[in-house]
Image (cartoon, rainbow, N blue to C red; front, side, top):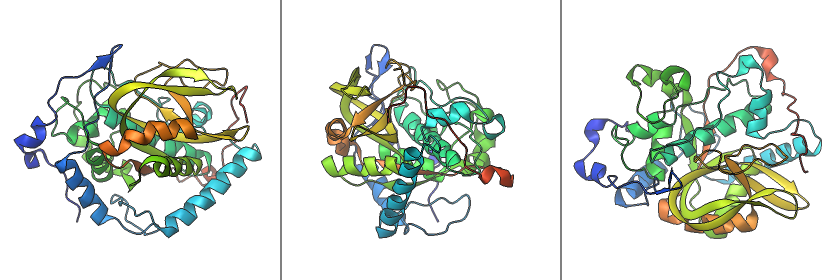
Length: 353
């Protein structure tokens, strides 16, 4: 039986380690992801000890921690080929923001994809929720009968911190919250992500939106490769690091890419995959709002692309924050059998293949 979080379980030491003053750059908090420490390492080890083989059946409401094993690698390889076929044959677009834009009204509860974290150091909660959002939308485009119901990111994040909104959170503890508590749809708790809304009457509803998680316990180039392969398979990854994105530029392929400069202690997520003129890219999403200009391809100004070389540099500091994790989202179903047909999501105007 998995241990559940209760505020009474929290020690003063655990709460005090998160009581630090927020650091801001241009109005954005950049130190909301807590570096790994003994307590976070203990949480990670407990979760890893619970991990089950990929492909194990589980009951609804008890989403597992999954092992990265041969079964997963084979499944991921198959998913990559399927996703690449959808792109090469121009069948349907899997970009989360494009899917949401063209999703029929009965398949979504809101048109929101991303929040801005504002004045709270809640980046880990936003990265986690966004990864769930992104993968859910890609699965819908591929035929899953999910109904898209976005979350207010502050709720699960705050619960994992004993109800506090002061200080940040570690990757491992956020992963545990996503897995054991679930997520709170904005339809139930509202969209104010600057204070913790009333949520105790919605704990059972949150359990319908848990995440099965899989840790990427790798470093450097190997971690970068695992993120690329996971994004290519239609999955999303949440992580923390200290290599900052200072802005964006356009590369020789006409793709809006990240510029790395400076440092932070921040959590973000990766989603989406593309190849342009033989160069692989993965999408990277921040929670600092529309800081990166939208290109003629129409992507959100919350995100940029990273080539393999940029990604390897970016994740070089991730190990100091604990293992990133893949999100396998749980969602409510619409049982209308007609929804099992793949949606025909058009590619954005001016999209570069």
